[in-house]
Length: 459
Ligand code: SAM
Ligand code: SF4
Ligand code: F3S
Image 1 (cartoon, rainbow, N blue to C red):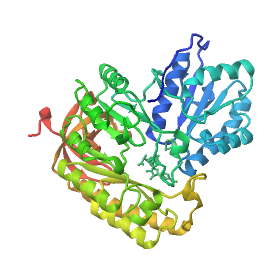
Image 2: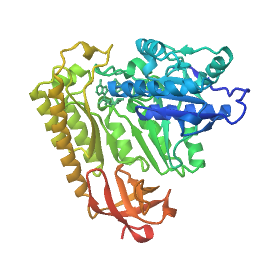
Image 3: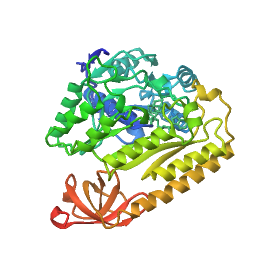
Image 4: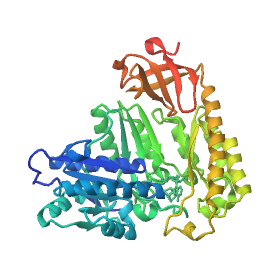
């Protein structure tokens, strides 16, 4: 069982109207961390701004899962140099997954010496002390804890949304998929105590939140590191009892740890939404083995079958990767075949990208042009299936949680079905935050168009 550390709000706050800006990259867990960074800064007395020129502190919360994510940060740092020259008191920070790799932290230090603050994923709660140190000593602070020291609770949080909240239920990953950097930068799996999660969600409901998404790199191994027999299914059952909470989502699930009890609990729990994000990564057993995913395509397809029979209206989405080292045309054909069999509602598709320090980096690589050609074919197939699946929703009525006006057209409202499909329809803005019934009139690639069913009933 990991140690629990209580966050202590510092007595000393910043003077004057100091402003902060956080730019976050990467997954939802990083977005959630950014909400903690904002919370800590606001607790210190900073106020938010969207304008770089106005900010007194700018923090880049970074991701290193693929090279493109890292390049964006280097590009941004290059551009921020000018701002720092013009405003020497500006505090510039880089945190998150990138500096958690030793060579990257050194590279940032060397190539961007004007960065004041470099810290990792394990010491976010130390931010007030580190800022103080920068201000007092007028020198850069580099503090990256190599390993996790516990779970910090009661960190202040400034959430981006007022309706839907992300709740991290566990940190880290033990899976060591051979292509992935995450276990190296996020540490081992640590589950938060059920009572802390339940309390956080009860408080959210009190504040008016309707939906929570439980976050972890592998949520269904929740509890395995605890000394009590309490697992992800137990947590779902307890959360399902919270009055006022409408929807429970979770991500990401690892297909290896998805047992029958969990399927049955999801099928029976009223608030747990019928959406399963189950990254397959590949459809070839040979590649799955090389990836260290811990399941075969047959086991994966069996899992999908069991989900579909327990939750007939479930939507299924995935992460898929092409060009893993050694992937042959035949292996790739297995991925396409898997996609045709499962018929995902949508999928995040990735081109394999070397991550230094991971086992796959040393394997024989697939040529870039082969990877580009395969990703195009995969996207084409998945788009066709997504369109067909969405067209099949035409005429059906769905419960939609209204999130507000659409970005491009203020006359239209947008919301999501329990199956996590985006729906746009006409209706009064006052419906924001409400659950309404919408009849689907048109299924498109990435969204459903619909019309409000009057009186909020299905008939
Ligand atoms: N924990 C989740 C799981 O196992 O499904 C995924 C988390 S990872 C941040 C999100 C996705 O990034 C993975 O599912 C994988 O498809 C992709 N990914 C990870 N490492 C990658 C790499 N080296 N190159 C390309 N895509 C990668
Ligand atoms: Fe990466 Fe695999 Fe862990 Fe997901 S389960 S974070 S892909 S190592
Ligand atoms: Fe990226 Fe770190 Fe998430 S590497 S995907 S931000 S865990």
